[in-house]
Image 1 (tube, rainbow, N blue to C red):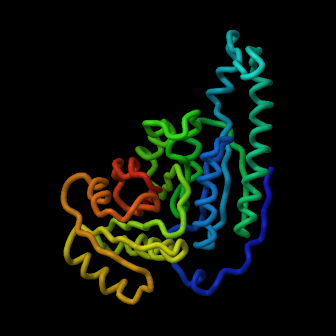
Image 2 (cartoon, rainbow, N blue to C red):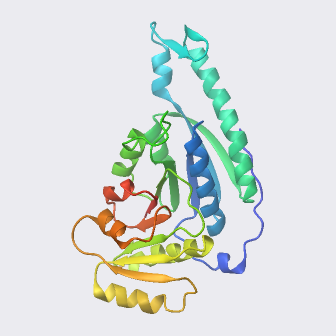
Length: 277
């Protein structure tokens, strides 16, 4: 249940770019949000020259539920029908095959090395095990909801955000060209890969770059480092207090992407994608 394609050779500017991301893993299901996540993750993968992997998790809780004698399924249309483990496993296989097909098509649009895996287990724990150092784990912020925009973050995203310390991409809408790329940094040496990643993605999306630094020396250093950048760059001083409010107050517009080393949960409530390294 996998397919691989050979990526075309990357432009020189991409191969010389030193990225902290060496692989991108995308959590997939049958929801429209999965397509949104995959398209943005595929574009990031292509920009970084990193292979892309789709991961479909067969939820073991659903299979356990199907073994209960009272288990039934309400279908619209169709009414109520019996629901057992055989039915659940068959339907999960159909969903996985469908997801693999359309996800492979999207990966092919970006000429990416593509691999698809199906794993059975708890969704959040399985996703976190698939991530790790050098791997950008990408998933939808609001999960597979019947609503277009739920009022709260999905339970899987909440758990991953709280427990996963490796690189993470959370989003609910596609990152589009021209939308702002926002970098939150202290200017420390170990954050330079994050700075380079923000610059690269601003180039890919032809977007303005907004830098949020929390001390004058970091701002001065980054002004010099980015002085020759062809991108429009603005600088903003961070104060103590709510980080997300300060980013909103800077007013670069909606959508886009925030990159940060800070595991600040308020960032996940912003109306944009978030990459946490």
